[in-house]
Length: 458
Ligand SMILES: [Zn+2]
Image 1 (spheres, rainbow, N blue to C red):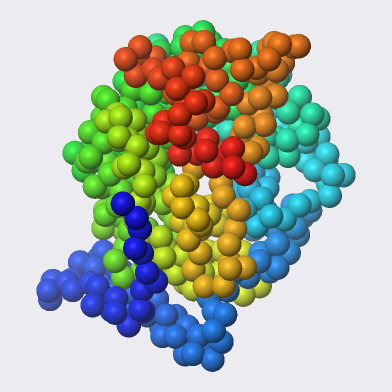
Image 2: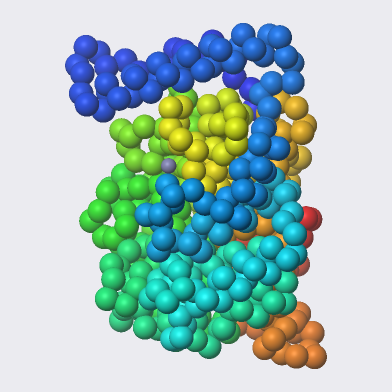
């Protein structure tokens, strides 16, 4: 089965405009307004593209400048994010990696020193120096240090205290609080397992720490098919990504209705705009280019693994050109940075996740060449769809920590108990879900090779 995707002719998809059948609601009014603003942009784009065949263009230099300036100094608009500083570091570093922008070593060393100051004395990373550790900022800090990838950066992750912190936020049923005394939601499970995998926790540690976790995650699936933040909450793109990505790492997907999840996810791509919405009846938003865009191949990977049928992965089940149109035509600020939707200001969060979505749209069919809209210079580097860092950074970090556990011995020998030199390997708490690592390492047909194969090609 091969993909026969073609770019849309913009005039064609005006037939997908919302028709409220004369019954206005708050959400239909907002939707029609958004479509009107996007129609103006697409109409203008068609006129410009008639004059300049190289359009649409990724404004690489402008985004690079925006990221570079932001890493050195942020405007006062970011004051309210003082408890999310590792997040800002991560958003900048990951967006820069996707654009293949390298920062000077001296600047990256300063970033590592800053993140060390955010490390709690009892483990984990807080939102800034002296702040209490939090699973979300721990995830952001670990991802950032893996992206930097130097010995100095990776040695800034203290695994014994990180494990203690994870135990301090673990509930007896396998769910995780975001911080001590904080809220329980599916982000916690994802942040914890993502960091544990990158840091190569031992299979025994993983099994104990995540006992019951995939069962709890399964309880968060809603009647719509997507996942809410906790049981009985509304299905949402960000939480659904966290749930599916965690299941990809943990195993246990057989407890979920994967077909319903796939149906819900692919239906979040907007027929008119080309981008994704986060929830049913909501507006398109650039950041869901990643949360929902990466969710599609992850769910296809879960189904392929559950059914033992790798061919499910051959063709991606969302419109990869349409998503690139939305990102490149509607979400770029001319002076750098990417946005939620036309009319919104640029910010680091949307810059990171909109570019991450672009990377997924281009690279998610791992056995096919990248699918790039417009000029070949629009191609960005791939991102690991589960961890959202460069695939090689994920593999290098995993191997670095694996080596620390067994100095002097070949890491390949450590395959037993579901552990291999592959951060995508499931370390299932359920024996029937566990795939032997040797099959992951030797077989191109392993469903979890969705990303590991990309990592090995990189
Ligand atoms: Zn957004």
